[in-house]
Structure formats: structure tokens, C-alpha cells
Image (cartoon, rainbow over all chains, first blue to last red; front, side):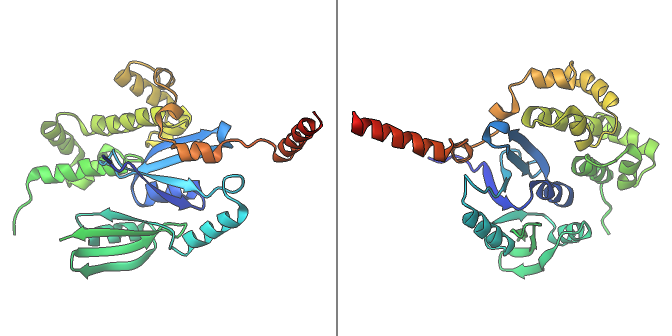
Length: 138
Length: 150
């Protein structure tokens, strides 16, 4: 039986840019950052929500050959940029406050806080284009 | 209008330390968040949480630094800056007081980060070095030829 979700992965165009966004703008904390020379300098980079130590978000660079052929790499980059590759869903106790706070730090919102049957939620994007949502459940 | 419990202002300062420890943040800034004078704030914070705000913020930074020493391969200087401290010398001294060893010794006392971080099998397989395909094909062709001629 599966016990626990430990990591969610998002493809990012630039790991340094992503790390800056997720830590400095969203307020997440750096969890793991290891570069492996034996794997072509593969970099395992993860961040997480402070206070939730058992779940991390892996910020994965989109690899080229030999892991993916150039065409696949380009296709993933395009899908990520279009915001259709993946997404993350966050929770907050105060979606309006979070919206104002993140917006003041330069986060680009695709949707202002909106009433929904389940509460209020808002949408934003990371610098690569990944869709993120933050919801205050009622 | 309900009056907020005095501790809620202190909690706001504590939350600020938790959320923004990576940034230049001092007791004065925390006192502003709690809407108290720095001296009064420090006394009240200690009474409520059992340690001074300075020590709380420092502990938060040192705990994070210890995690980064275990879970990353970043340099000590880089980790010092990442957790919001500016002086590597002071960092090393404070770290030693808390953990009884230098940051470098602490890292050496734990297994290398690569053995602790979760790099899944699919990554190890996908990113593994590939042999020189052209040379491999040539060798295979030679092997087949030798089998055929043998």
C-alpha cells in the first residue's frame, strides 16, 4: 500500500531562476541541492513549504540528449511555457493576504482571488510557465 | 472591537522570524512587527517563548544551516549567506556553540548529501553516462565478424 506522497516534480527552464522564485517570492525553503558529476552534473534541487517537512517540490531541469532527444526536450519546454505541463496546488488561511503579499514580490497572477463553491482561490505562474494555485478552503 | 491578546503580537514577530530568516532581519525589525519597543519586546518575547528573540532567530538560522550542510553540497560560506547571516566567522562560532563542532566538521560527521537526498532510480538510469555509441557499434560489428569467420 502506498504510504505517503513525498515529492512532486515540476519541469523548470532554469533551476537558479526557479530556486530564486520559489524561495524568495513564494517563501518556500530550500531542501536539497546536490550536483552529481558522475551523472553529467545532474542537479537534484528541491524546495518545500516551511512547516511541512515531509513533502518537497523537485525543480527539475529539462534534460537534452542523451536523456531526451532534442525534439522531446523542445516539446516539453514549449508545453511548460504554455502552462499545460504540470501544476501545483497550495493552501492558505488568507488567500487575499497571500495574493497581495506575493503580488508585491512580483509574482504574476493569472487569476485574482475568486469565490468558488469550495472557498476562494487564485492562480499564478512560475517563471517557466507552470500553473500554480493557492486556495483558502471554506 | 475585540482586543488582541498581547501574545498575538509576539507571535507575529515569531512568524516573521520563521518566514524571513533568510533576509537581513534583526530584533529591531521583529519588535516593529510586534508593535513594541525593542527592549520591551525582548523581555516579553523571552517571557512568552523562553528565549530571547535574538537567540530564537539565530537558532532558526543555525537549524536551517545544519540541514543544508547535510542535504546540499553548497559551500559553508554560501550556506551562511543563504540562512541570512553575513559573517562566516560569526556563523562558525555560533554554529560551534550549538553543535559542538565547526560546520565543516558537522558535514564530515554525516553521510555525504548524495547518499541522503532522494535521487530516484529513474534519474540514475536516465542520466547515467552512455558509452561511445559509434565505437560500441564498431566493436559489435567486429565481434559478429569474428564469430562469422570463426
